[in-house]
Image (cartoon, rainbow, N blue to C red; front, top):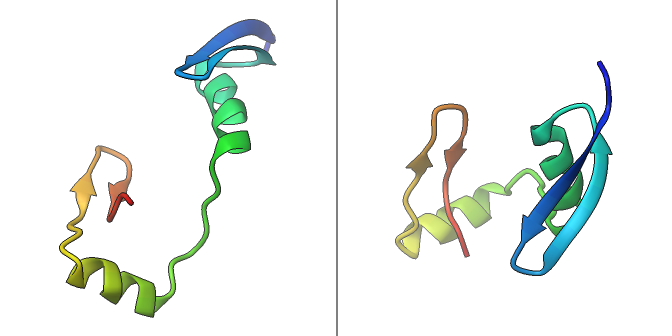
Length: 66
């Protein structure tokens, strides 16, 4: 695939990214701002007891946002 230069905008500003797709460009920038890991069972229980409920998307399920 051919790479293009994308502008990825966020509240923090704009970033130029060379990538093969728009989603890859966003992923590169987001990857520097966020971290993801597998939740421990205890963490899941604590979040759900605090009233966090799953949010659904077509491709992923967001269980809780802090």
